[in-house]
Amino acid sequence: MGVIFTSLFALGLLLITQHAHDLRLDPHLILFGNLNLAPFGTTTTLPFFGEVPSATATLSVLACVNALIVIAFGKEILVTSFDPTHARLQGIASGILGHALIVLATVTTIAAFEAVGAIMVVSMMTVPAMIAARLCTRLSSTMVVACVVGCLGVVLGHAAALSVPPILGPLLAGEAGAAIVDTSTAGAITVTYAALFMLAVLFAPRDGLVIDAWRRRSLGT
Image (tube, rainbow, N blue to C red; front, side):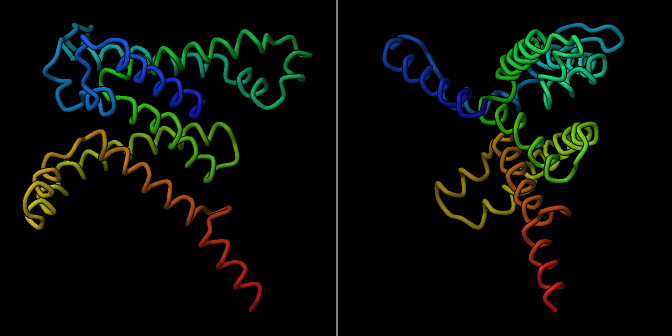
């Protein structure tokens, strides 16, 4: 999915660049989204919450829909994902369920583009799941850990976007320092996800590189 998505997205940008010269296209907005300015955009009124940014309202509704589908069809999703033949023998419409999940993922991806951009959408849909897969062996625990890692990456990335540039900016003179001061929050969150993934690769309890080397050294001694 990651290869197909990024390839077709790049092809779409290429076609727009070549054939839609009058279209005002901001590459920074497409890649990194409009996360910092989302609270100042159009608003939507939600029950019990009042006026909230439209992106927040849309993504909150989609998050609830995703959660409800996973809770309602969790067993069917598990069987279909790991043993489609057994799912068909049990009478589960694995084809319909698979297409429904693809449609849901597509709708969620498109809705997230406006707020967070292409880079962060791809990273949030792949990196937390890959980290959780290295830390867990059960699907239920993998999904929970992926959600926790996703939230943790957002918090740490946003904190890094606010705290790191003022520290590094004065250390660099000229345009380099100015660029660091004007750091993108979505970019910082994506870099944070990459750092968390590297930590999982190195220190995962089951197959981390450092843990595996330590075990082999212990067995050798």
